Image 1: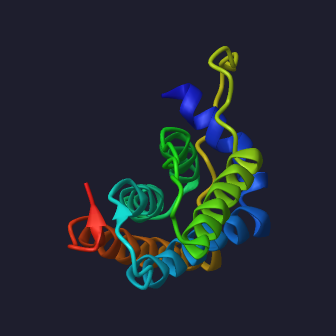
Image 2 (image 1 turned 30 degrees about the vertical axis):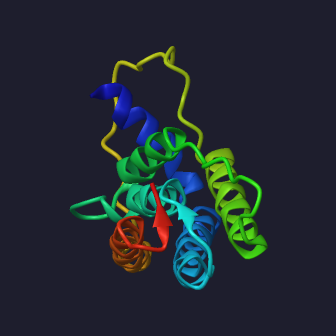
Length: 164
């Protein structure tokens, strides 16, 4: 637990405009993927909307008061997501939006990497400073949008235009 508090304390300087800007980019591109997938006109592998849902859910599934530990949790979740392999015949718009999601995820992970496992624990660890009210409100809006996108993408994965 002390290691998590130390990590969260170290991350606080990173939780400024860059992190929220990148989170917003992830939410924006996952949202934009929904109508693109819906209008593809050809069957899309279920892995495509499932990936979109999983990425959005990394943000949308966070609960409680927004805090620095959630930024760390999002990084851990995003590291576990594997982009689908898009085969021949995949509409170019789908290829482009999946590439945009991949880039946004990579940018976020570059800004908010998980710390190495061997981070020494100091003797006295201060609890992390909570996010400002403005940052917490911004994070909450992104979390709500991401949860809605994840839900829509899950529905698309079960839709008849998507192949299993």
